[in-house]
Length: 229
Image (cartoon, rainbow, N blue to C red; front, side, top):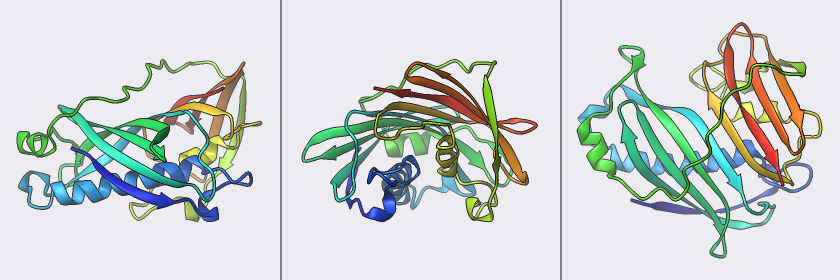
């Protein structure tokens, strides 16, 4: 199963260099996946009072995505396993792949307030597809050399009263010399939602063409890695 949608990249999606931001790119990816999910799950009773929570992103960049580009984003639900559902995304311009991604989601029962095992009717409705991109293995590091405070703004929160997943990418931009133009890969794993904190810490360790990071307070909220070409 595949669904695609064409987007014209306006200036509002871009940073000061005219490149699409990670927050806006992932928002567009989630837009087309939501369109697909609404269609597939329209009459699925097994999805009553359940919602998909984003758990992680793996995004690989082959070429920069710039202002005025007309891109096609394709989403492909590949497979499901117990609580988890996996999707691929392909970002193309004139048939050429500019970026590809893998996202994982957890099925959450809003009534029981816990993860739910995915019903067979849901898995069958989506089917299985070949995995175009399977992401990269990553082990979270424990020691970070640097840190800085990130103050949470009201604008960071979404309708569920926690910091929107896309905002975490904005926080990573506070890493000194963060460079979207030369970005080759980013992994973001969401662990615990940011709900009532006034500030969180951004912890990071810089190596050659690589930055490991963690966003946390009394608990870890997210972690991952950035690499450059």
